[in-house]
Amino acid sequence: MDPDDQLMLPEVRSLGIDVVPAVWDDESVDWSSFELVVIRNTWDYSDRRDEFVAWCDAVEKQTRLLNPAAIVRWDSDKRYLHDVEQAGLPIVPTVFLGPGDDLARWQPPHDCVDFVVKPSVSVGSRDTMRYGVDGPLDEAQALIEMIVGQGRTAMVQPYLDAVDDEGETALLFIGGVLSHAIRKGQMLRRGESGAKVAGLFVQENIEPRTPSPAQIAMAHDVMANVPGPPGQLLYGRVDLIPDQSGMPVLLELELIEPSMFFTHSQGAEVRFAEAIARRLRG
Image (cartoon, rainbow, N blue to C red; front, top):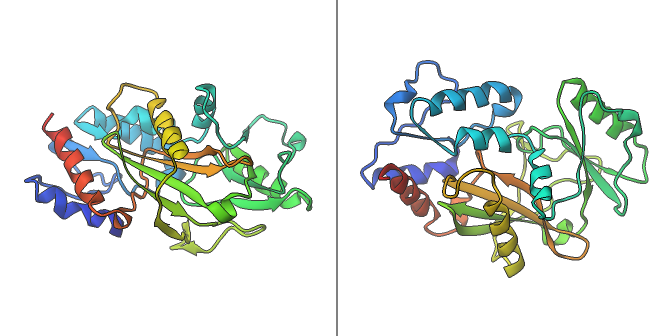
């Protein structure tokens, strides 16, 4: 279990709730024996997405699952950005390239110096690279072909330069309420995939942040447009970056296993535990 989440377990127990860490693909676990299953550090799902979604469906037939299986299915593939954009909300401009597409006809984004290629199903920064639009595109082409050749979908996005100074702003929601926010510093440099930690994640530079009114409004709009009934989400994280004009646009919406950065906001783990308790008590 992630050290960040370990802070939350004693808070849940202090509310009189039995909490048992379990591994999602452990066949010996009887999921029906739990009143509630909360998805947390399932960071290995991206290589087995279909299997993971099927597991979510199966668990939801036996007990309550948070976040729900339908959300897992939708949010585990970043093609959900299409839906967000169709709802009228600004996203980082994204081109998706999948099996059957003419990969020889893709072009780097306009009006940017660098661009990023990554898979639509991934965690951390796996198979993610930043390239210059003015340089040879062979490496970017090769990465796209590798992703698509494995039956996956590749994404091409402009690298918005403002993130180098401003960083990403991640707004954390607990029980539908904005809890806190953090700043992520620059992670991708041109031609580098980043310094990996434990072979999965790029090293992150995290610090607390007070979000702007525009960022708060944007994050609430994104959460309000998640498909499904209101009040279904136990947690969520909205990752924003500034566009060329400085206005926030959506980079990612994390509704499955996001790091919640409890250590960067006093009482955040308590708020999470209390949200779990409210769900258990109806």
